[in-house]
Image (cartoon, rainbow, N blue to C red; front, side, top):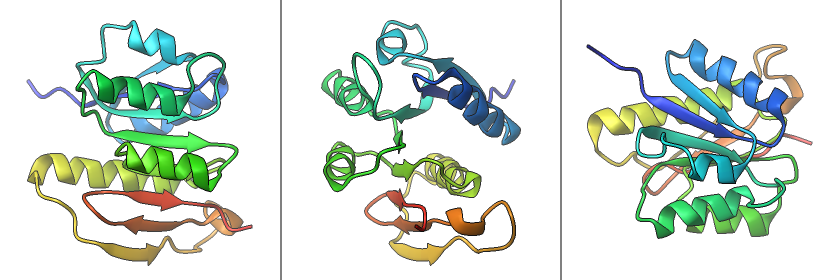
Length: 164
């Protein structure tokens, strides 16, 4: 029987967790949410997690430290980093630790969907994605002023900043 991939979501804001979970589930994935990085690390779903979506700024262990903890345990789980306070230092740190995406809140749902689609393709192909650059179209209210530029390079790195 086919089992949908599991996406774990870690954000100290339960409403953000719920919103991201609803979007991800609408794409056919299973989700589990955590309001603290420590709860995720103590859970029994780490090995099953196909992708981790984590906030940067959280009480206790932050998202970048969570990413580093997984890496130090030898876990190669793809990580999508989200933040309400984007800065180059955090972006660089996340990408140096092999984050597949760095999205600033509020991010366009299409940007997250694109990241998950690329990860799904990557899992199926097991081949690196070629470098490309494109703009997610400004095609209505869903995109509007919050459009993102997606950059796919290396294997699968996406950097998305909202237009200001």
